[in-house]
Length: 394
Image (cartoon, rainbow, N blue to C red; front, side, top):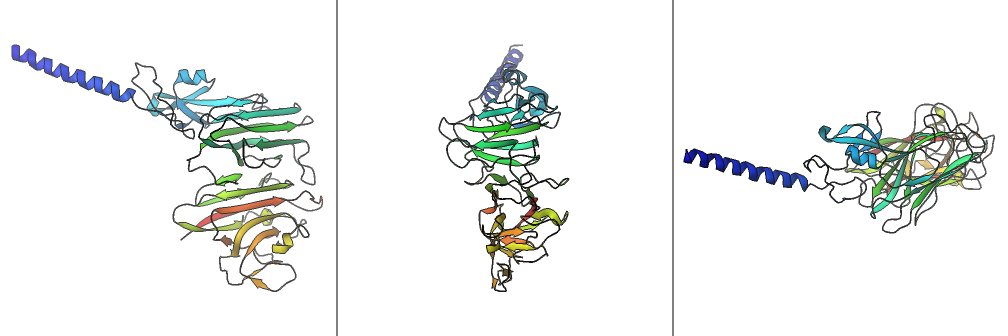
């Protein structure tokens, strides 16, 4: 009996040591908030046995949420919608349904008051985009729903418009109006200082408006942080880029007075990028051409003395040939190896052509510059563009 009791004692001591070690290990796990750096460990309930990172999760309504405990979600005035962390966590969706306010949590939705109904009250809504950590470099705003007044027939946002203002560096965004679901913008957050970026919507009249915009906070070390100067940033070896207020269903007017850069992250093993207009219809590249006119312009034809709405594809050439196959100016037969500026009714480096081409650039980082002036003619079909890109291996 003495040996049996000793055996049981040894087994029980081993179980006690193992349990203590397990408790200590689980309780010591640190949790982090993606896009906001490593946060101090938070010990959750259930005797401090369960702890998990605040990862992104998908809610029961297919919205973007953050994994946390239900009590923590309640403390942030969020909505629990589904589970995460193998059922131990709650997928918390954060929303701000007021005209203005302060956003201080990553992955927060800005929605119009009374969403999903429309909002017709005039005024200005201003949201302060406060950093949740000092190492936040950028704020990314994804327009899930964005329907406000259309611009004038000359492309001016005079009735309603969104505008982002950086915290410290960079330019304010262009005035954004019309239909922009699926678009996104980046705003400088002012890393390592107390300043905050702002985002505002100015509204006049009683238009039925609707908006739902996700605000994400981007760390300075994040792979999703764009290079300096990029208002938009796309990732992936292929993708589609649209001008502001471009929709497939209706030929809306391109916005005037815009000057911004759309960037594409260079993926591993790729050294060039090709751009071509979408094959949906002939109107997928209309930078200053009357309805039914599809001839291209480029180079000097896009200067202010010519048609001053254009996109920039640096050192671009049809098919990436660089063998004097481009024609830069209207009325000239002199070939050139490449062209930077493109406008008119067809995307190609050959001026006065109606045959679209894939324009390839070997300049990195991969960018698409977008410029429209403030002298849009009401009789010109400035629809904008819908371009598809593909990265080309080294």
